[in-house]
Length: 105
Image: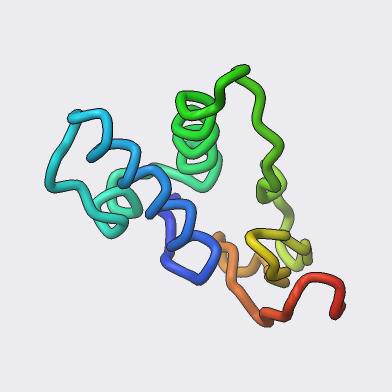
């Protein structure tokens, strides 16, 4: 399964790409590159956690992630930077169906 772009996916891909640029691993890295390279959502989220842990002074991060091994029809809420994204798993991909300010669902 590959990863499809969507609001939350694009944001975490940007975090990973920024980390790749900041650490000199890939000075031309883009979020689109990260989305294309990720084999699945779990891999993308692992890359994000690794990038965040590298920036964390104590090596601890608190992040919201999409559930692993989702079943068709699963709905989940993801909080990120003052917004909550409602995602629906269908056809093998997480699809963003609604975005609101945190606390509005």
